[in-house]
Amino acid sequence: MSDKNELNWEDYEAITQYIYGALGAPYNIKVKGYGRNCKVIGRSKVEHQIDVLTEQFDGERQLLTAIECKCWDKKVNKDVVMKLSEIMSDADMLAASSFVKQDLLKTQ
Image (tube, rainbow, N blue to C red; front, side):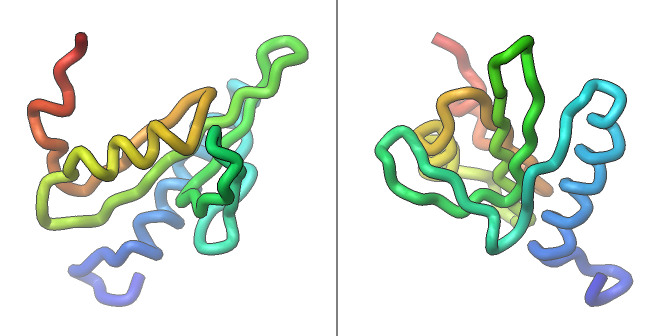
């Protein structure tokens, strides 16, 4: 980490991928990539950068999970959630160092 008392976005992504790699291994979940060079093609057929991308298989079906890491002091807003939802069709997850706005957690 850059500073003993401060976590930056690069460290946060690295820690997140490490946790998913370590805890996911017994369940055959593998980290496919993370960081600036981790890219996927979304539903819109546009290439997107993903902070952490994991893969697992359900029989023959490949399941990808995109994890968007936000190391912010402020709450995560709707734009972040909507962007992530648009990128992935299988699964997505938000790892945040701050809270997510309450109205984003309500289900329909």
